[in-house]
Length: 195
Image (cartoon, rainbow, N blue to C red; front, side):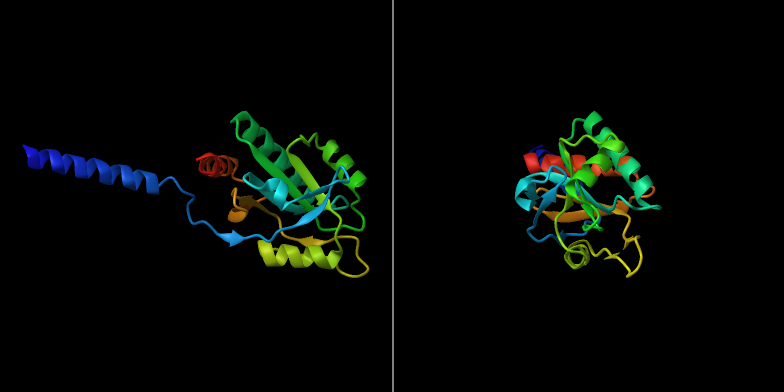
């Protein structure tokens, strides 16, 4: 009888251990992000120190975009609404890839045209074209190039989910985002942050 009790205890502990291991993000990217401080849509400093201990979603857009940014902004708005509906405290950060055009005022007006909730959505500028190109490539492995004599910027269309330690865990298609997957993964990261 004692042997059966030990065996049951062992199996129970093993099952709990495996269940706990399964709670993490599937195939995490684990890309570190560097510290940054840029200028937000309120013309105030905003950066990694403001995101410390928080889960956040990031993307790269610009206000003069005639193609991919329009659906990306609408999709991010939809993701924001779903995160809020689930009671998840997730910040959103959109980095402008056209900083000479995208002043804080321009970004704020742009976000408001999408009815974005700017209490948790931060649109950033305040750097040079070269700086954002380097930042996007080095941290997010994303392109952000503005060809000469062109008002459009070539840039990545992914949404990135970053954990409370500033590590990029997942990327998703920003043009056709898997909202349920993003919410599920964000919930896991929020629980880890609170744990």
